[in-house]
Image (cartoon, rainbow, N blue to C red; front, top):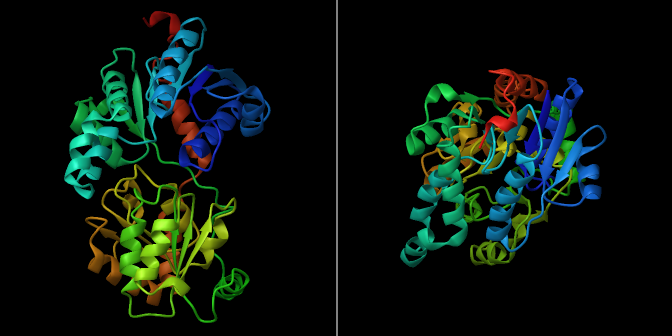
Length: 385
C-alpha cells in the first residue's frame, strides 16, 4: 500500500512523535510505501524519520491556533491532488480515512480541566479560539462520512468518543502503544542502588519520580503538596520534563522541602530515572494513555496515577500501583506515595509492574494498525470529496 501519515509536529519528546516514528518505520519495514505529511522542513523531517520514509511538507503560519487550522486546510488541499491507498491521521484534520486518537478526546479534556480552574477561567474556556477550532475539527472528523475507522490507544478514549460524539463502537479499534523492552526493563536491586548513587541521591533515600511536560495538566502542584506532607523526610522528589519550574520551586520552598526536590529538566534518556525510582507519581488531570506510565511499569516501577489516565488499565491497585479518583485528592495521594515508597523495592511489586506491560511491543502496534488499514482495501483517495 501507498500510505500517508498525517502529523503536524514530526519530532520531539512526546508520545505522539514516538508513535509516528514507530508506525512510519514499521509500516515501511513491512514493505509499504510511507509518506509523512507534516509541517516543517525537509532536513528536519529526514533527521526525525530516517531513510526510506517520504515526506510531504504542509505550509502553516500564525500562532498555535493559526497553525492548527492552516495545517488542516493545506493538508486537505495537497492530498486532494495526490493518490494514496490509505490516509492515516494522527491529527484532527479535514481529510482522512483513518484517525488515530492518540491525543484523546478534546471535549473530554476540557470537561476534566474545568473544575480545576477559577470561575472566570471556566467562563472564558469556551471562548478561547484554539479550543473552538479544535472542537470544530474534532466534531467534523467524527461525523465525516469518509472516515473508515478510528484507532483509540485505550479503552478510556474509545468510551469518550462514543459518549461525546455517538460514533458506532464497532468502528473504533483499541490498539495500545508499544514498548521498547530493551530500553525499559527492570534492574536487579544491587544495580538500582548503584544507579541511585550515580544520579546523586543521598544515601538511603527513596525517590518519588515525576516525568512529564505540561506540569499543570500532569498535576505536579498536587504531587508537591502531597510529597511535602509525607512523614518520610528522607525521601526525594525528582521532576523530569519540560516546563517552567519557577512557580513549583516557590511552592516547594513554602512547604520547607526545597532540599528534597530536584528539577532535572528534559532528559533524552529517561529509563535510568524509572529504574532508580521507588514509585512514579503522575496525578494527571487527563491523559489518553500515558507512555510515561507504560515505560515506568516496564522498568518494574509501581505507578500512582488517576482515573483520568487511560494507562490506568494496566494498574492493579495495591499490587503494582494505585488509581486516584481525582488528581487533587491529596490525602489518598500521600498515602499511596508512602505505601509504595515503603514497598517499591519489593521484588513482587516490581515483577507485577513489569508483567502488566510485558505483552506490549511496537511490532504488534504496527501489525494491528496495518490490519485496520487493510479493512476494506482498496479505497482510493479520489472517491473522497
